[in-house]
Length: 454
Image (cartoon, rainbow, N blue to C red; front, side, top):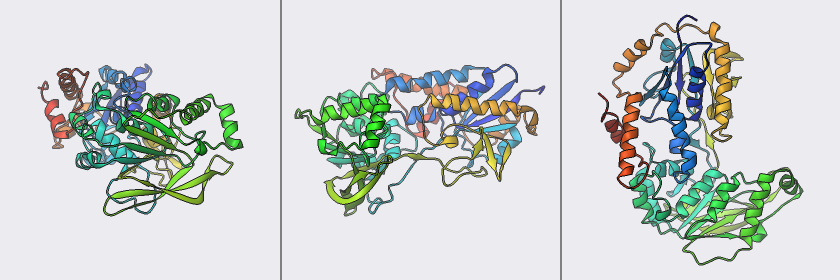
């Protein structure tokens, strides 16, 4: 190919940035990449999903940011594919499209009462305390100062993150880049008890040991574990014997079960073999009906019919993420992913020419941030192998797409715009003794993008 291959990457989270990096880092085929995101800022769940107090993990975005410094990579923010521009139109300007827009919606519990006020998704709570532009500030700034008892459903890392943030003192969080409104709300918190529900035993929980241990290191929160709920069948014992990470998790929980409370003002209750079956209340959640479960010998759990009630005025479900369909792109409704073979998007048993997929929308919400690098690299390898077979976009000069952007009516955020936002957030944080303070509203982000952008 004499000219540069033109590739659009839809989504600027880790998968998108790793895909862009892989495309421009290889030497055999010249490539230019536009990384398109519906938000004015890049990095997806690294910015809006990783807990703000996990500073070292969030620092991955500094590594991702370096990709924008490489020749041939552009950020195109505040442009939503499927709304502002169709996939069909993208094909007019790009030889290939890589979909990396992730899986950001929550899964439901599907139990009575789930629609009551104060029944919320962990994804929405995380978006609020991370400063996502679409965060529902009104809901959480109303609920948190009026809740005394919280039930968190799930025993993965996101559930642990939510529990930890709600149980920490404000002083334990002020070093983070949380928006000021989060600190203002958490100062008003009257939460005393947080109940975390896992439908299976501690050997089946999916949190990591590091995340779990952090719960026991909080300044003003005790851990409560009922030894009777630490149930291990033969399958569990085998998992513990075979998996050192599981063994460490179980060891931590067992130690907490024998530890006396110290009288701290907040308590984190870890419940195993327990699943919610109904939320009750007036207009707002007031109690959670919990059914005790038993292991089924195959790694699962089934209900016993025995129930108990937890008084609670805030319920946070954290039972997984799911992907959404994008107009004009094949979608597997059962698995909530874009169907593929080796990263090549599939439709009616064959590959869709010029369309590829990477990340959570490819494989589902699994793995750690680093998993996406290998995944994106594999997809890029398929794309490059197809290079000679790709249809040439009719308007493949970068200036052609620039003309479309100029006429779109959108304030498009490019590399310089992002740099201006980044500088504004760092300046805002420096004034408060932090590395950064997140700017939350789209209006303020767009304003910041123009500060140093001629």
